Length: 437
Image (cartoon, rainbow, N blue to C red):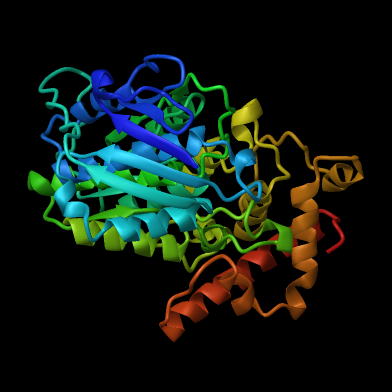
């Protein structure tokens, strides 16, 4: 078991041992060998909202940082089955009393998200939200904004913003500003209509452990939601928009469900960052602790191609679409590979929407050349197999393999339909490229 004990005060950390990893919250560097830290840029970013942050939402952000640290610094190869880790976190909060009933739901959400077994202990003595920065050019103005939208620099998040603005909304954009991502996000942001403010920060996890980091960092989406919830709850607290405030999570229905293309992808290769069940659990947590935020994915019943085709600002979308990033491997070489599952769905959506795809892909345009190589075609082969199996697959049973579906018949049928339509878009694209499916 990985057992992390957190504190925002270096002097309060326990000594490192074979059983305990001391973890510094909101710290710039690990204080000594055998320790880790996370979140040094976060306090300054929160202060730039220029408002006293909602304390309960700030506690949520503290939890999210601790979760990402535990996820990042727990070696998955040491798990008994090579995958499911046992991760224990002791996290100090400003007001842990609010979280008693919500803690089991939090553990359930994290288990579902990362595929691990999480044990969360919440204690008193946690950090308070930083004092707001009152003046300067770096203040993130929330005035005039009436909702919040996650803004990753991806194609779906761009469509989400354009549709909100076209419908008369003015969302505050929230970003994870990882190295490389920030420049791309800033470039796209500058081309958006509506003069929208953007609130973003990075996590900066650092370690002086001897074990390797888990590069998948599946729980980053929890931090993304926590940042968004903090911004939205703070807006509600100060009456900038009446609460509860909507936090939009734009993601096409096929990726949100992310059903396993082959049996071996059910655990290791099927992420659940925007799955219906996961977002429902997070919404339950927000309600239970009193954070006035409503999560909404307006595209959970839409394919990526439908999102593009129905976007209410086609002119701006055509300008920014080539700059958006969908690739699951983009961070490695700063170019979209063109052959991973998100890239294949992206390429399919351009064809389905009728918009010319001007994106530069590392794999080029000849997918049969990708297949001819000795390696690097696992995702493409998996997608081909899934497309070939579609006519005989029970799609309801297929998508249920990634997690529980809603009890409401109409809602469940809608999710089944979007998975079917999404795979049809991919199949049509692969056939257009001469790939045998």
